Image (cartoon, rainbow, N blue to C red):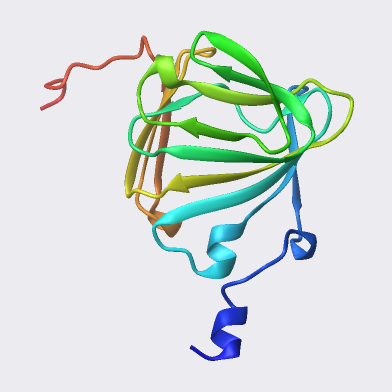
Length: 163
């Protein structure tokens, strides 16, 4: 492998062009999906910087994809299932697949920025559950053809309806 090929597989956190995201008064971050920049195929990885008092995403669990987080800087709280614990720089966090018992969320409840790297398996189909809002999300495919459907737990339709 030549130097140019190796260089296309390496990027430094300081060189990332973070994109700002916010939703309502609870969710905000500056983040970049690093995997696509480097040509990752089977793993997704991102870098998130979350301001004080915010979280980058809702409390959720995965039925197909496993996630891992590494806290780069700062402090916060990890909600995991029915428990919560303080997290800090240097912590690795494992979030295996499962139901509500593996639901997780990182919250920056400190007075300074919290930054972390997330790594996840990338599968062609995924189902996520959101216990706080009682939603289920199903995701599949890639690109413009990617399926993304959100519904509430109580919006169940019989398998045979309309057949």
